[in-house]
Image (cartoon, rainbow, N blue to C red; front, top):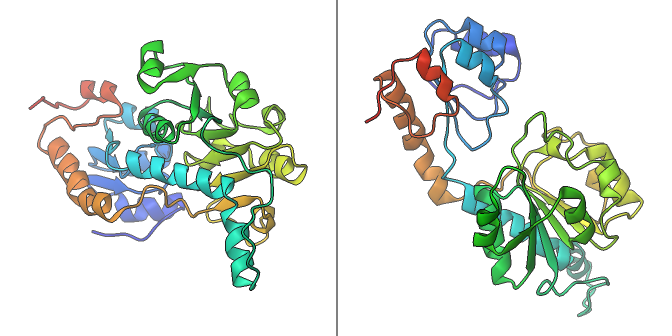
Amino acid sequence: EFLPFLTEEDEIVAQTRDADGLIVVNAPITRGVLSSLKRCKVIVRTGVGVDCIDIPAATELGVAIVNVPDLWPREVANHAMMLLLACNRRLRYLDREIRADRWAAHIPPPVGSIHGETLGIVGLGQIGGYMARRAAAFEMDLIAADPYIPDSVFGEYGATPVTLDELLRRSDYVSVHTPLTDETHHLINEDNLKLMKPTAYLINTSRGPVVQEAGLLCALQEEWIGGAGMDVLETEPPSADNPLLKLDNVVLTPHSGFYSDASSAQLPGRCGAEVARVLTGRAPLNLVNPAVRGRLDLHDE
């Protein structure tokens, strides 16, 4: 049964209380929603992040939470590199000039060379790793901040491990690839944006609230940084009066970094298979809350 995008807890409860399993894009699955589910055993999130689901509540109530982490990472890394290039090459400006019948083979400085410049990757997980591979092909110097990744992984990608503050100081481009957790909420904020170079760009394809939007707006308006490429915002979609929409040094896309025809075609089958696994007593491929196995009898295939 296909449902429209629901945001209110009462609406979600009314539509889902009899479900055996849920496949969720972004609807908030709160403790209240989970408590109302009469026989639900599994909830599949269609992407990597599971910040829209109350994981502790789900575990406590015996609901398996499953994500699909391997369909989108290359697309998101491609999108992050696209935003980086669009910022560096001042794509919005050049396109607007041509459409206004102004043809000048010149890009207003500063315009970095990209090769030999430094990319700082915040979060060297799967997507961050793919971003590192793409940046290496552009002959960029790589540094990364991720306290949960062993040094050997940094070496695999040719990235030097640094602290977040050092990364912000040294980078010509900062690309954010962390999940949204209590720890990463407003990880990039007004205070540490001041550490960045005035010519540097911030790229975010992770989750909007990882970057403090008010702080970013201040950094852009006061020219603490050169600009930003944002696929995600704190409020999506943004209100028509969001000041970011008026700034020339921002490239915005509508949380579309995940998309390709090929990956989207695989999604329904992958999600359905994960639901079927749990409902037939088998362990899913990507169980987010393994502690739930104490509440559900799931056997490995």
